[in-house]
Image 1 (cartoon, helix red, strand yellow):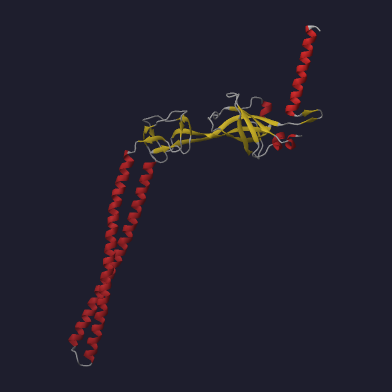
Image 2: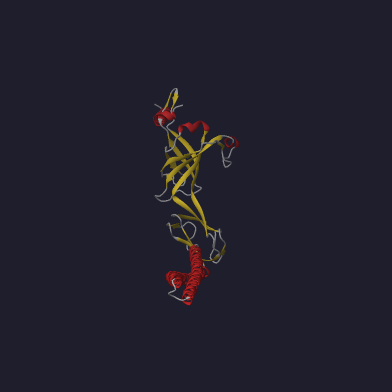
Length: 330
């Protein structure tokens, strides 16, 4: 057999083997095409949080991390000069101490006023008894009119004293209410000052990677000015789009395998976590006009990225969504 004939036979065998392999792998049979997986492409996204100081304004004195560094939840990311805010806390704390002493004095004054009124009431009761006795004795000619008049005068004096002390009791009650209100306001001011002091420290709300550092040491930071952008790389997702004809083939929780050109030998497990209920045109980032005017549905595939944080926001990736035979057949 000639070399040419052997080459033709070898090529024919190779084509046959590749065809058989395709039939076994993808389930292609004459008259029936069964799709075992749905391929989609998109970009990796992650939860990103732009962090800044809330209601305080001061000079940035600490910024220990650079872009690309990993930080744990609760890590101090930045710190402002807090001297003014510490002074405010000290002033409000001192003022509150004075107000609390005034409140104690007002409570003591109220208790003293109550005791005086109680004494006055007892004295008035006794003076009423004395006057009634003196009047009865005068009516029976046992006591003189002078004795009766003296008892009556004492009764009127006791009544006037009770009225005066009851008015002072009312003043003491009002003073106590004012003192209590003053203490409550002072505590609120101190609490607000302590909150503002706490706002001079910026901490990481979750573990992640610093994507962007928008500020530099020495800058005067205004409230709401971005300092750093933090990304949660433990939990990322692939944002992709499904053609309208394929939307019935997928469901929530469906398994997918994600691949990237950056790490071609690695596979990442994922599951569909979101399927848009509204069709949209393909994003303008798609290159051809024909593809951009196609109606598609946006999906998210959650990916476990905690192993080494290989997947980064913006990274292109492909996903192979596993299809059940019932949903794969047309």
